[in-house]
Length: 110
Image (cartoon, rainbow, N blue to C red):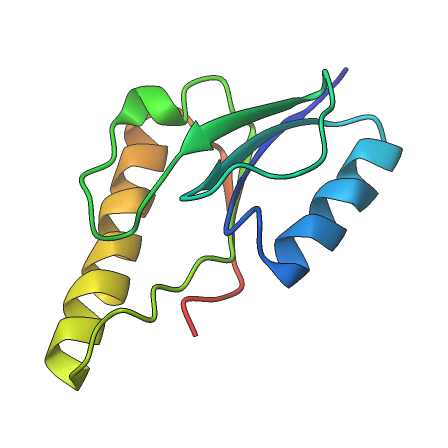
């Protein structure tokens, strides 16, 4: 059975390496990020994602696993950073639950 893994921060340093490893293991990837990845693969679906924006459970429908690597550095104050990253992560996890994601791996929002 092929697993579908949703990865936030997909175009970042860690995200690129994680996605390549998952592809080697035969997984299908939903790459969630603000920028499209440079590499093309029929096993990777690029989906726009921004921690500061609302996220729909439809974005995660069909994903078996969510790996959250994203962090948004745009907050200029601690309050702004918490609002973007903490609240954005909370919204993401709620959308994952609503979308039927069974496993969440939280690596970063710094």
